[in-house]
Length: 248
Ligand code: ZN
Image (tube, rainbow, N blue to C red; front, side, top):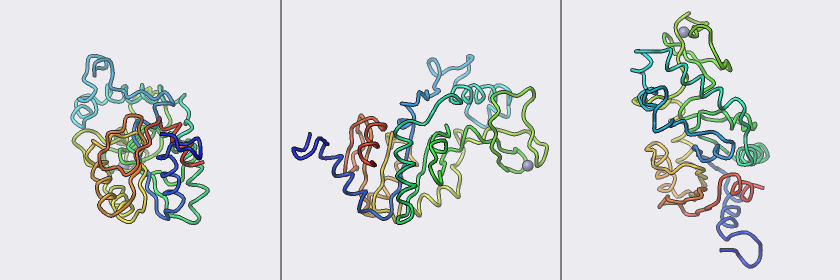
């Protein structure tokens, strides 16, 4: 509902007021923030790619059985995303964080692996699910950034000359411990949490949101189809519209 005083919804005004006062702010983002950049969800046609289940491809077992087809799948995703640009939501968030971080604690945790927060200039992106643009040594676990869009041979690590794997979290794997620890510490102390483009159903995201809520933080849910019961403020606009309104 539009407030009479300004051409902004009451919820947008409430969110702006909360964020202007909060000294410790956590952002948590998911696929919805990248939708306006044209990043597909990569669930494939009916959940299949080259007659393989997309979910089954994103597993350590699939990589052990056939590393080439798993790399082909991830290289296809790199090729699709390479031409994509950060949208107004990524940029509003990055600019806000850069302008405000002198006087506040600001953290961003993302479930996305597309690298668009980094491309927008977001400081200190914490990736809960890894990155499409990172390779990991299968022997020692060391990671390195890699922007290759194709390989003549499967990639070998510079450290151990061992096969590299995509630096993402697969089904059945734990989220990076260090990042999860940081997320928990930030979330327990934050005054406001802005959840963007994620339903909060993925258990890790849900746990972080519940923790923030229980510790007294104001939870702001940015989602065109709000479904987060515990959010204090719902902004039911697409991320690229909502974040521009809230953060500028
Ligand atoms: Zn190594």
